Structures are given as structure tokens and as C-alpha cells.
Amino acid sequence: MRALALLLPLAVAATPALAADPAPRDKGFQVPPELTDPAMAQTLGKMLGSLTRAVMDMPVGEMQAAVEGRTATPADRSRTVRDLAGRDSNYEHEVESQVAQAVPRMQAGMKAMANSLPGMMKALEQAANEMEGSLDRATANLPTPGYPKQ
Image 1: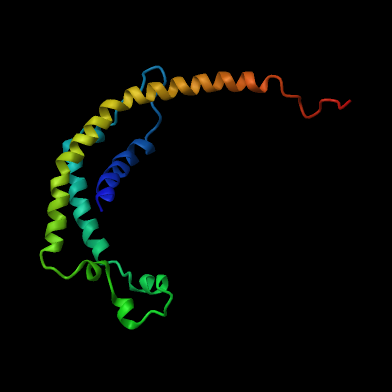
Image 2: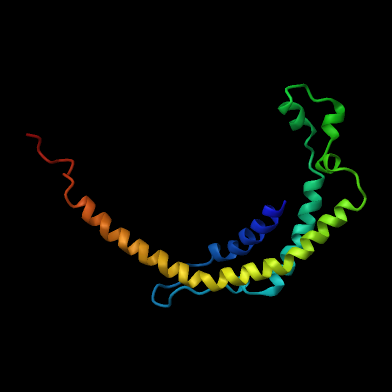
């Protein structure tokens, strides 16, 4: 659950950046404003609360029966994640409060990632340039397909 809470914001925040046109090479890499906007972390926190409720209502009884190697019963077909976690009335509230507490950490993580992106992009471009040169050198001595056999 915690991994989901940490990875989902990164995936959602990166989606607009991936859909955007690539930054021109001469200007360098620019951090998308969505990654530095504190409101985005708040929005993601609200989304995670809704996502948590949806996951809790997912049916899992048939899968549990299949894993156990038996035929699913009507009771299995209606079993959800919430049933497996227990019907504690405070459980859902506890999960939502944990998600709410994760928002400041999410904001800090998004800020740290945004600060490190320009350096990572520069290093990746440098590595790509080095690999391009080494690939040309590695393939320079390969015979062409039409090279006569002796």
C-alpha cells in the first residue's frame, strides 16, 4: 500500500511531461511545472484517498479460491479486500489519514526529484553521446552483407 502511495503520484505527475513536446536541445532540460506545484501533491493525495476506497471494494474471493485450488462459492464471489482487511469501522479512516500524512512527504519527494532532473538529464545525454560514438567504432569493422566470401 505504501509503495502504491509513493509510485502513483510519480506516474501521474510524469504523464503530462511525457506527453509534452521534447525540450529543444540547445535550451537544455526544463522541469515541468507540475512537479514543483504543491497543489499537485494535494490533488494526488485526494486521488489516492478515492483510489484506496476503490481498492478496498475490489472483489478478490474468486482469486483466493483459485489460488487455494478450489471452486469459488457464492460467498467467495462477494468477498472484497475490505472483507479480508476486516470490517473495522475505523480502518478506512486510518488508511485515509495515512494517505493524508503522506502528502507532505510526497511534496518533498516531488521537489527533490524536480531538483535532480536537470542533472540526471545532462548525465543521460552525455552517456547517450558516448554510447553513440562507441557504437560507430564497434560497427566500423563489421563486414557488409554483400562482402564476398573466400
